[in-house]
Amino acid sequence: MQRVLVNIPSVPIFERVIRASADEVGRALGFSAERIEDLKLAVSEAVNNAIDHGNQRQPGKLVEVVFALDSDKLEVHIRDEGDGVDHVDFSRKIVEDHNLDAGMHRGFGMYLISALVDDCEVSSSQSGTTLTLRLYRKDNDHDK
Image (cartoon, rainbow, N blue to C red):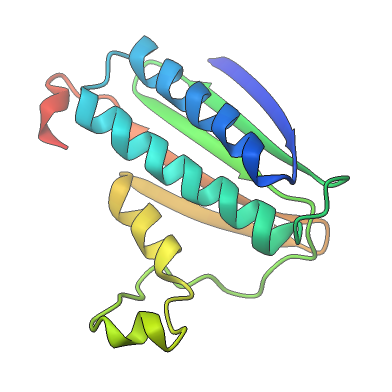
């Protein structure tokens, strides 16, 4: 297994470093352009959640991102140094536009992430939360 580790401070501008890394890793794996865009968006959303919600934008707290590549999949582990969460709902969807105006769009990011990747899971404790994203390599990567 090959691993790429990137740590960034909890400052939103550094999300771009992770996004660029996801692009390079996706290209190295031979993912289709569409699949790379899905990867970049999912990782970007996860990193922004870690910065905003996990680490509360405290620059001294790091977001650790590990890209783990093996012969059949890419796993991306995004870990914050926050206080943890009890439960993450991957199923929430925005049904009507007025919900956005009412501020009811919290949780949509997790649904979006789960829709963009093949598999995802969350583990959390009082010392931080790790979101693991999986994208499986396919013989013909044009399916997703």
